[in-house]
Image: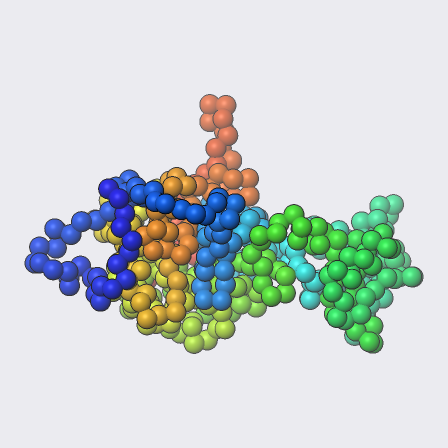
Length: 424
């Protein structure tokens, strides 16, 4: 069956308001029911842009999000997704501190200029530097005094011949002939300075010698290597993270915002419920970042979340490859119909739509976008990549990665943070 363009003129697409009295007569379509009809085109493949809005003000060059699942998205995959032009949603089956640390890892992974570089004092120990460098996967640390004045820099080169981890950093760091740049230095100017002096790190200091930033060769190289990456105004990779509706929702949201998260995702199984609408409205009022909310599968559910202040709505109840909602509860709407209904609900709102679930092939992404989604969220298609956090399992001589739903016994037994997704 061919998919017609979404009807943008229908004033109300809720099942209860459709013509007729027999609601079972409504046709619901999902990915296997539909093919896109080819049409005449004057656009060449290399002229196509896949850029699409995630929320108003944030555009993805690749319209794909990785799912907020504990076997799919943590810092490593979020970094890879942003570099590829999409975005990762760090799952919330972590403590507040650990989830914020994963977001911080993404935000610090690369930058046009690192505006808040991690530093140590000259009286710290080499062991402290090694721990910091290992944690953030960096090769050097600026050394500052109590007033943040730059007094030296410590790199792997300085540590190469020093085996005593209890030695003072001040005794092994490079402190003489430091090459620095003034505030306002452009990346092009920084690249010239780095090349002229054959160094990899360029501290940026103010007129009084206080450290205000750090520019690295690695970040400049990554700009060239990943030209389509999703970055914020400071040149840092963008990152989203999930919050729930439980008692720790505000504490978690605050910690994530402090870590630099770009988008908060209120992640629940049934977004069209009073508790979810209430927490969405409160988070929107409290925090200065866009809010994605879900999941819903109807026109009315979409409208309710938009009225609560969501900048984007996540659509999909039960379509996921390992989701049992439709089997256990008998609840759901075929995904393309759900997306089409939700798209109609966006009329008059400055908001976006995310199709979440049911995508098994690349063609399903095209169908979801044609049905009205701005972006799609993937789980199973990304669960097997090297960057996902799932455990590797050997079976009959082949390597597999663990993948499970957030309502599974395994996810709930491992940690308790995902329970309110299903018991809000």
